[in-house]
Length: 397
Image 1 (cartoon, rainbow, N blue to C red):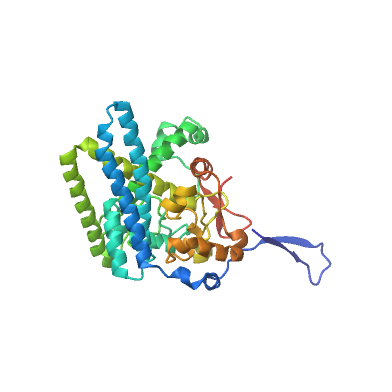
Image 2: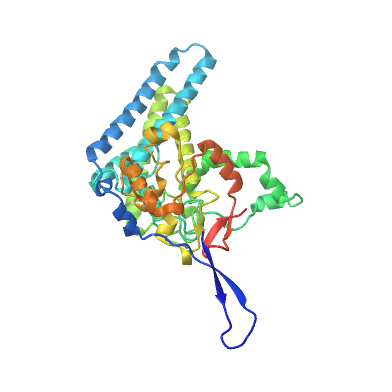
C-alpha cells in the first residue's frame, strides 16, 4: 500500500519547515478496463457443457450411492465396514460440493443464457442438498454486491474489536480473556463448531452478516433466517420464491423420510447425513478462506467500492479435487467476484487475462488448504483501522 510524503512550507514567515505525513487511498482499476481485458467468449456460457457437468456429477453421486447400498453391506467385519462407510461419506461429500457449485453457477446466471433453465436446475440441485435455492440466491447476490463492506456484506463480516461473549465474560471474569481465547483447545472447539454448524446458523439466523445488510432492519432476530418468506433478509417481492425454496426442501425431506423407512434411520444417516455435513464443511471452509487472509482488508462504507470489495478476496489451491471436482471455485474466486456471470470453465483464462492489470492487488495463497484454515482461524480475529490506507480495515496483528 503506497504512501506519499508532502512538505508544507510557510509562505511568508521564515519558520522551520514542518513535515506532514499523509496516507493515500489505494487506487483500483476501473471495472470496464478489467472487463475489456478478458476475451469476450469467457462471458458466454455453454448450456450443453454445463448440463454435461450436471450429468457427470449426478452419475458419480449415483454410483457412490449404489456402491454404498450394494457393496458395503457385504463387508462382514464391522470395523472394515465402518471404514468403508467413512470413505463413502468423504467421497460423496466431495461430489456433493461439485453439485453445490453447479447450482451456484445457476444462481449467478453463469450456467446458461436461459434464466428459467438456470432457476429450475439450481432449484433441483440445491433442494437435493437441502439448500433453499432462491433464498440463498438472493442473499448471496447481496454478498457479491457488497463484498468487503463492513456495514452491508452478507458473509463473514469481521468484528472490529476483540471480545468474549457475555456468557464467557460471566464465567471467566477472573481469567485473562486473551489467554482463554488463544488456548489451542478452545480455538479447535470453536473451529469444529464453525465447520459443523456454521452453514445452518447462517441459514437460520443470518449469522456473520453485517449490521445493515438486512432489507428490513427492524426484523426481530428470529425473523432473519432464510426459510421465512417474510424474513428481514428479503424484499417483499421475493417472498414467493422463498416459499418455493421451502417447498423444494419439503420434497427432499419427504424423500429422506421415505428412504429411512425402507433402509433404516442409521443407514440413511450414513448414506445422506454424513455427506451432508462434509459438503457444508467444505463450503463453509471455502467461503471463509476466500474472504479471510492477513493481507486482505475490509472497508468502511464511506471508502468502499465494488472493485475494492471484489479484490478483497483470495484465490486458494486445492489441487486436483479443487480444479476438477469443485469446478475451480477455490482457484478463481477473485475473477468470480469481479464478474460472477463468467462460467467456471472460463474463469482460469479470465484470471490470467486480468492479473497483469491487478499487480499487487491480486491475492493468492498456495499454502495447504486445511493448514491455511487453522492458521487463518487463529490469526484473523478482528480488524482495525489501517493507518496507511484510509478507510481500509486490516486484520489486527
